[in-house]
Length: 51
Image (tube, rainbow, N blue to C red; front, side, top):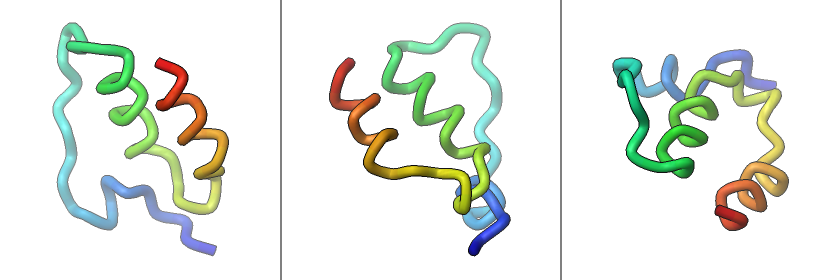
């Protein structure tokens, strides 16, 4: 399994904003930092859709 995060794979680090524009942006920001092997796409998708 992949141990790198999306952020590491893309080599694109998003700066931490002082305030997120929405819950969706905040969740996407946090998911980019989680290792791929730890992501459960179904549950994350459900989190995003529930916003």
